[in-house]
Image (spheres, rainbow, N blue to C red):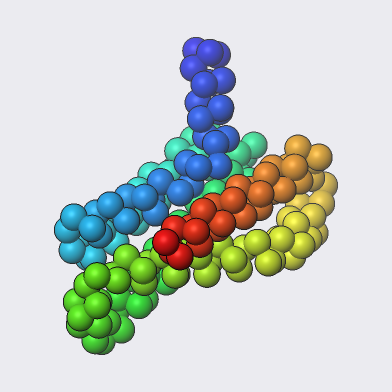
Amino acid sequence: MKKLKEIYLRITGNPLLGYIPLYIFTITDYITTTEIALISSFLACSLTFVLVVVLGGRGNVHAALFCAVSLISISILTILFLIPGFEEIKEQYHDYSQLFSEIVIASVLLLIVSLKGRIQRYFITTIRSNISATFLSSIDEYIYITRITLYILLAHMVT
């Protein structure tokens, strides 16, 4: 049982786990309609959150940051989809339909990278007594992975 818990903690500590809902959104949006893609990505985001935070315990609360990009991006895409006429614009520019979602995701990634100091200050001031060096290093790792993902996404958008 202890071995399974170690494996589980190792898997939930992976920063790319939080990006799975975005992958699901991109794949299902390409195959089916946007409504189904948004619903499936919200379900995946909820499942990821439950696996990482609720089942992982209080020690894995910082892993919820990995789900933040997915949740914010999918929420913004939902708001865009609810704007009257957005579906017609998306259908008109069908060849560039994935570009809309990639621009939103890149904007959220850029916002998180630019707010690194504020994110760290927020966690230092709110959980002052429970802060540890590993917690701060996990935030640094999160920002580092976010920056790498942003560079890859921007390179993909240019090509």
